[in-house]
Length: 300
Image 1: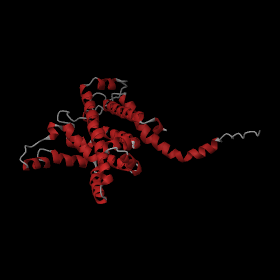
Image 2 (image 1 turned 180 degrees about the vertical axis):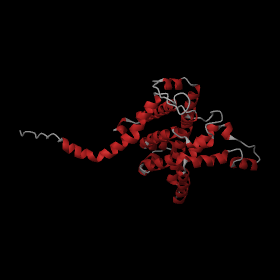
Image 3 (image 1 turned 45 degrees about the vertical axis):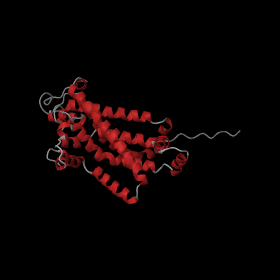
Image 4 (image 1 turned 120 degrees about the vertical axis):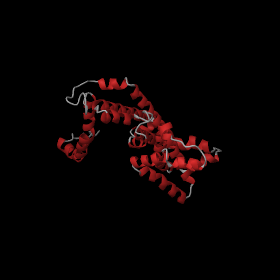
């Protein structure tokens, strides 16, 4: 029996040489990511303010800012609107519409696919501020929508006043559907036509083939897309601010706008930072839920 050859322990100098190329990236992460997070946690535990009480001297207040948020009806109102906005916009709107467009493009001609993709992606690459202004001019009291309704003999509507959270949701669906469509087009291209044809020969209809064959194959892409658009939608600020500024009367004030109001309009920087960390925690919980929904073999 030949003796087994033991591996010599790695020399520290060799390990350091191998890790050296990673140092710049590690330093940048510490400076630009971890540093602001630690400073935000510190701010959330203080009464730091831009004006009024707390502006002259900053004192440690512990978890008082978080307690103030959890006992505030306005905060919970914003949490509810944020969840509604995310559900309507990301989970239902962008996700389903993106999937439908991707499925339709599988059987469409190349010209139709190219033109449709160009129009939808053009909406996606618009900055939030530009998209918000376009929808503000379209849905406003003297906007294009009311011009069209009056031309058809129908009464004018002011959705920015009567249904503001729905109006900003429509705008965000219009702007963000392209991302889901691109993700699902790439995922559907990985599904072999032979699999679909085999299911068709077995007598499966269109809906059965989609839910029993296609959807299980692309489930990882579906959950990844849902996680990404959920996190993106939770932090939407510019679009809503341009269209409604969170009004009227806070009827479209999601958590990012509530945080901005507390931190910069009212000058309560510590309290606003605590709300921002709660929003970060909500995004973390959403990510964990999506990761939990992934099958075990897809996590490895």
